[in-house]
Image 1 (cartoon, rainbow, N blue to C red):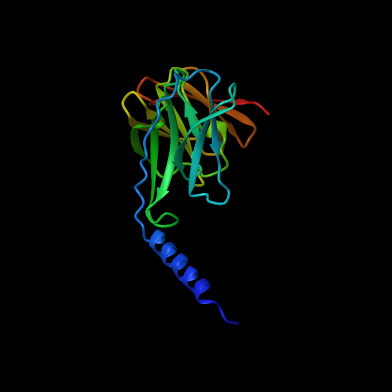
Image 2 (cartoon, rainbow, N blue to C red):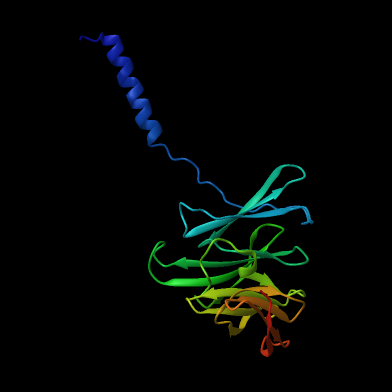
Length: 218
């Protein structure tokens, strides 16, 4: 097949323009944050557990009344989430690997600002947090927002207690034979045990255990 000189010239010109366009420098994207309206009871936070990429996660924020997407927070390792009572802070219990999918594991409690969805502070926590489908009572808070309770599974079970007013881990409480943590009031949480009982643990203001009781439940 013979191509006319005119067609060959057109093809060469188009190829040159494509090559020039491919090598052109595009401006860098800018990544910023947007200030959202004050959070209210209708705002929804959706934990997006990514089955095809379990080492990362995200929390999607929406306004269901107006059917509007508000933003998103990147999290680590299918992180569970809990919202403070005043709606000002979002907590996630993340973990990350030093080589993304392998390597050393580090667990981080992240406190996010609900006004702009950026971290306010973070805290390294014991690398024991249960890695499972997001469970409401695997990560929860005391009624007065002072303590966060993080459920651990190694496979022995325990609860990491974080004092958010001090931004520090104050205790780890063994709950062997029991699972999860169901907060009750300011200083108490319960766990469901394999023998059919409900175990209740009471803390003092420093997060130390001061009482433990079991009640036959099932």
